[in-house]
Each structure stands twice: as structure tokens, then as C-alpha cells.
Length: 169
Image 1 (cartoon, rainbow, N blue to C red):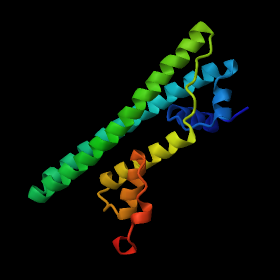
Image 2 (tube, helix red, strand yellow):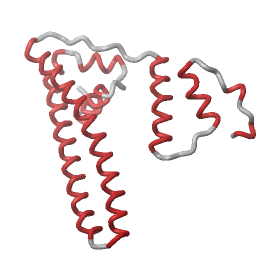
Image 3 (cartoon, rainbow, N blue to C red):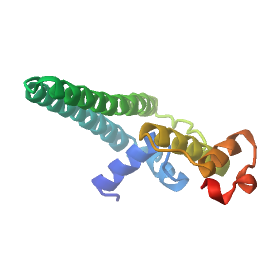
Image 4 (cartoon, rainbow, N blue to C red):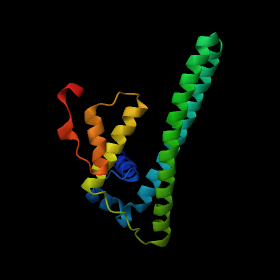
């Protein structure tokens, strides 16, 4: 029997489509369906709590920074931007958790195993990694390099690595 922590991690990884096939098969065993449903409900509760905590932190910052004049307004604007981004990510993940919950509840109610989409193949995984790499560089306002641009060009089936001048690195 898989302990609750590991099972909950499997459930979260499955929602993110990062669970290996063997472990996905464990979730799809009929005796795990109710446990899977409960783990998803707990995950939703946890995500709701995270959003509530962010809202509370934002309110505390608002009260603290509003009394600091112009500098406080700048700090508050930055804090609100960060809080909004965190809530957006949590809400996006919660959307997928709710979607998976609907599928699992349907399995429990009908007694029929759902069809799971195939795990992304290696090329899809690499494509997603490259897209995420580019997004993270932009999100964290990091400077792109010739190597980064060559990597991104592979998404268009262009090979630019051989043309990189070492002085451009």
C-alpha cells in the first residue's frame, strides 16, 4: 500500500501530466478510485487555502505599505503584482485539478475506467522544456544569449548551434 503522502504526490503529478505510466496505472486500479477522488478534493482544499493565505498576506502588505508614502506605493504595487501572479498560477492548476476530479468522479459513478491520454513522447517533452525555458527567461527578466536563441530555433526545425560565434557567448 502506498502511503498517503506519496499517493497525494502521484495525484498532483498526474494532474501535471508528469507521472510515469506505471504509476498512472496504479491510479487507474479500481480500488484506488475513491482514494484518488479524496486526494483531489484535498488538493483543491489546499489550493483554496493557499489563495486565502496570499489574500491575507496582501492585505497585511497593503496596510503596511500604504502609510509609507510614494515608496510604499511602489512596494505595494510590486507586492500586488507578485501576489496576483502566484494566485493566477494556483488558479490555473486548480482548474486542471477540478477537471481531473470530474473525470475521476465519473469513473466512480459509472464504474468504467477512463481513457488516459498517452504520456507525451520524448519530442513533446523536449518541445515543452524549450518553450518553458524561453518563458522563464522572460518571466525572470534574464538576458537571452545566442545559445538560447539557437535552442529556440530548434522549435522551427532550424539548427543554429554551429553558427554561434564564441565571442557572442
